[in-house]
Image 1 (cartoon, rainbow, N blue to C red):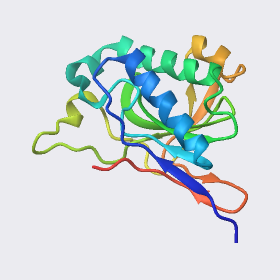
Image 2: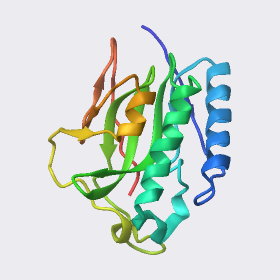
Image 3: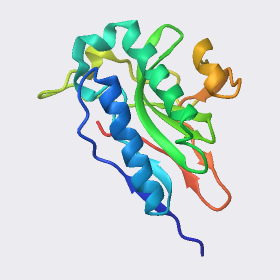
Length: 176
């Protein structure tokens, strides 16, 4: 039976600190790679930072998240390592809290959150919508500027999908 090293990351991300967050993400990828990881799992909304609050309602927060992902692609961070990044994604004019699974500068799956935290200190339904299409995959148009970093990829599947690899299946859900 084959084994796989998985790198999980708990990063000290800051709201809207795209440059600093990006550097911490890159460092975590280097550490995962050094440990022999083939799968790197980052924290929820790690690219813009979880605490953006009403800034999530601004389109440029999502746009800057795609720009940061393009920088990670250009730096080769997803080369030969499946990386699971947390960021907001707009699909059909609706904002979702997503996992974006990437490998070799390609987006393999955009996995929106099915259950949003909306009690205690959490008000995710103020900024995001839970996935509305059941267990159906749709095609998400990727931002034009990002497509260049993704070797011309223009669409990616979005929804509660799973990735079938050679000898395992990977799925993801961010906690509620």
